[in-house]
Length: 264
Image 1 (tube, rainbow, N blue to C red):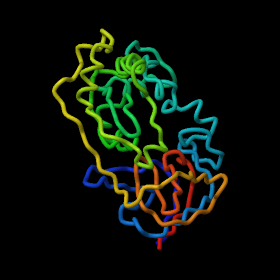
Image 2: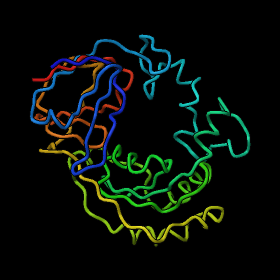
Image 3: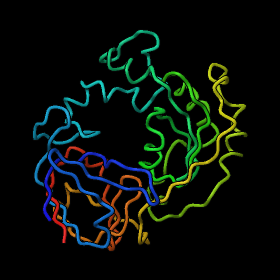
């Protein structure tokens, strides 16, 4: 089977295990169905997710020019505490920023390699947890805008990480934690502006990933250095493909790369 298109983060569907899909312009591929099969990935060209031009990808699937211009790459994306739409202040495109920032947001705890705090739109639960490879997660605060979620995350970062150790996540070097206890212990550190939105009645969400074999060590595939690779697909976790020879490939980290895929 042959497929061709620009890489974007895999779409997911909650299940036991989670279902993964690579979606191209005119086709899609259920990645779970090719576990234990040979998959060849060939880099063909760049295709910026905004302008569509064959320019080197800078960050988040965008060429350098687009990255510094498009509203979907504003600083408030990675640092939600910088959100200003609630003040009617524009960063790059106020209409877009109001649409995204002025909707319910969740501050959560997730365990993928360690317990971390994060922020996502309510509509992105549990997709965000799946993308991070979290095997368990829990909401701690639900607020009406991104700014309140951001300042809550900043306050909680003083007491636990906001980063995932992707190597530990991929080798499954993780342990179960009682996230309800963690949520309750962190309550006192929630900023006053967000304290009324604390959630105290929910339970952990558990996620199962389609992995037949975890790598003993991790060798990351970089299409700039190795534009053609072939291996046996053994698992999918987060936004990573895991191969039998310990190679892992970050689909989301390769957004904007136009590739050919061969399956046998």
